[in-house]
Length: 199
Image (cartoon, rainbow, N blue to C red; front, side, top):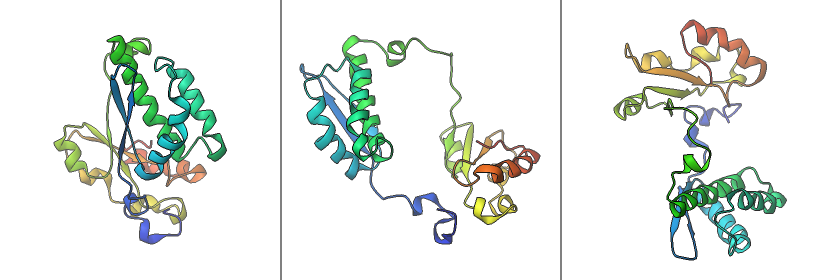
């Protein structure tokens, strides 16, 4: 949305739908339940309740891969990406947690044991003060100026380094939406010059 719509440049939340998060509850025959969280409550709830639930009801909750495949295929007429992917994700998360609860196993064991001893986590947002308060060690910052703003776009964005002063907090630039294609590659040297990786 940063291309040609200046009223939405400064904050991604300005162009995102104002739908709340929603929890999908999946219940087994014995009453055991689990939930999966997702975004875009109104349309996603409709997809889950009206489209997925009637087709999944009565299936084995242990058949997580089969149920994912069923949802992916039944969503195909309206696209299994976009909002349907949020619905699939909520049900899938609830199913995996339910399976783990019923088998008394953590989900990572169901998936084949841990791949590593720890995972480096970072926040994605521009409120680095809050991230540091929550004890994150790094953040990926959104850049409101991107491809449509020319090669000097990086200079128009707030200096990410200035947000964290001299702390050991790491920052990266979110290039997914705003710096696409060759333009993104043009900006990489500038990011490297101030020691900010592009993700």
